[in-house]
Length: 488
Ligand code: NAD
Ligand code: MN
Image 1 (tube, rainbow, N blue to C red):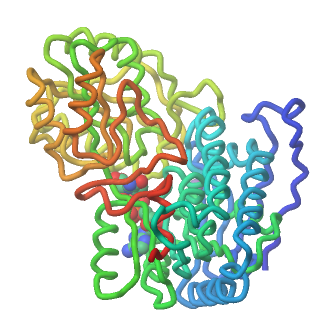
Image 2 (tube, rainbow, N blue to C red; image 1 turned 30 degrees about the vertical axis):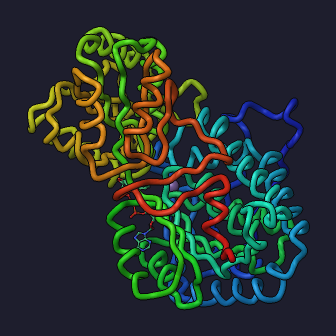
């Protein structure tokens, strides 16, 4: 039996320490969060989560297996039937507003733990992950008592029941918010599994949800690895599955659900083209390219990992990009000056290093800045591959690291053909001074989100999701709400 530590956290922002020095309380051990309580796994199994920047253990965490999944699904079912789906919608909304506000109050603590457990720069967890997670809860809290107006021409939507949700390690808290908020707003209950390298902010969120006094069993959090995820997805008591992760696992889930009547949404990989036309504002484009591929070490499904640049400005743009990359600081995720933090895990670093070698072996020209890397921890220099052939693995495969493959084009049509020459279709970027070209290109790039003269911009009201092998369904906005309800 595990109890969470009592936090004595200064929530008065004006007196709080800088986030990178804020004291955080990470317990030695965390349990599974089932039916409102932290409990150990029935088998007693645990795993360690480490800080990838130091390779030091942060905590041991209970690992859920079939019997625990069963207990959590039963708790979620009972909460669904007895309380959550019966609550007045405005009350559900109040709980979600409460979660959103508590997240804001504890923002610094969540940001620090997110950076320690997963390796992302504190500037990002502080300015992007945590505020956006809170914004997501605020946004869907607002819909909870307005569902009857959400889909004109339809009756007030009904909830689906128990949702099984599996999330990845690249945005641990934010993905938990993306999954939980719309599900709960519609009246569903949830069993959610965080990724094995980053369970801590989901467990902190479980503490926060308990503190917000949500009825027991409405949210259950089960840490574990693939087997735990599979047990959740395949549990007969689960009515809807939401998964974010690799295309390989997404395909396996789609296969296993094909013979069931479970609803599912899959948010999978990407290999987005970031297209820069000769008429673009070059300095602005350089910032957008850097943000597109080096944000969160490139562990971003919608990362702009392919740069397609119009041939006439290639040399000028690459020279400016290289100058900018010389200034990027790779290092301690808790230092607010850090631009690129730690690679999330050793296997992920090995995967990236495999591609760094493969790209060169296949004939692309590798370029890295002179910056040095810390001696300890999993780090990788931001990397360009110049003059890439379309057949190159670094152009075709999702690397999920700070690695940008550069290609050129001469005509608009060639740019579109190259941009769409991928099995993925999650996102894209277009940089041009011409509004007409923006509309022409965004209509032709086959991707769920296409940014124009910006990149990696997120808002809870905007739908997000993929075409082709990037997944099915949408998250965010009304489209995301629809995935969690039945409509007549
Ligand atoms: P993964 O798909 O294996 O893991 C994602 C989540 O799914 C984790 O919580 C994991 O425990 C769980 N999982 C694993 N196997 C499962 C199964 N059979 N059934 C149910 N859940 C299962 O991804 P990964 O191994 O962590 O990363 C591998 C690659 O996937 C990365 O290099 C990257 O290319 C891609 N990826 C994409 C995203 C994304 O946001 N689209 C996120 C993470 C990883
Ligand atoms: Mn970790």
